[in-house]
Length: 178
Image 1 (cartoon, rainbow, N blue to C red):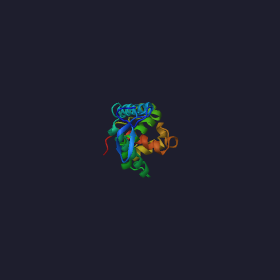
Image 2: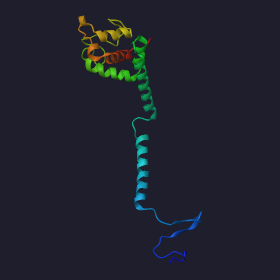
Image 3: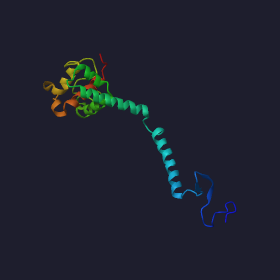
Image 4: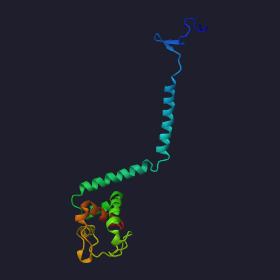
């Protein structure tokens, strides 16, 4: 018998000295599986926090800015039933459209206009001299319909309206908005 608790029988778990609302508690140690789960979850939480907050390449501000740009791109795309000059200028200032247009430009247009848009077989696209009009609508029309007399194919039927407008936005992104 336990000399501190005379009513305890040998082999029984010890009971705590305090009683609350007539309930007495056993004084047992937590099971090892429960402690291992607790400590493992604490270690996981610390590692996860470090990985997402300190070692991540993008912080919350950059992720928020990218998401806001994506939302703005969706708003422009959904509201643009007819692509006018103002809409094309907005598209040229949105990185989502510009990056998509750059990828399409590199795969279809860079062979003639050079990857830096400085010309080659085709004319220079970053200077102030434009052969077929310098308005955004003129650029869109030129890319869409082509100039067969000078060897530029009509990209509208091949790429589709969305990619053509992205290429026009990419070209306009290299120029200052009026």
